[in-house]
Image (cartoon, rainbow, N blue to C red):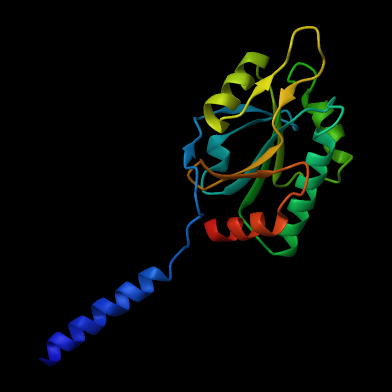
Length: 192
């Protein structure tokens, strides 16, 4: 009888402790990102392998953008600062250029400096063809990127995407207006 009670208590303890593990992201997308290797603002290769085991936040921007990219980059820089204040480690930020023909590594670096970006954990990516980034964005992030002929403006969404350590998109948030910083920080911590 005594052995039976100890066994029941042990099972209940294991059950309770397992429930105290990592929480889940509510309504997670769980969209896997296919492998990629592009060129970052340092003119070095950077890809999915460099992000393994890290939580990251991604967006799609371009330096000649006349409207939404400026507030998006400002908001991402603010999010980067908030993660520092919260002492969140093992976090990366990735901005994919949707205008790779114009956005060379040097152009991206100069653009990022305007926002006081900390390049230690934020990479601005280029080094692919226009068609490639359009397909990559649609296939992986379920988002449109389209550069119309004879128009310098690129059509793209304004979301921030939260990606887990396994390279799966968990959630998306508004990146240009009313960015939910508290929610994003909470979700990042949930994945840590």
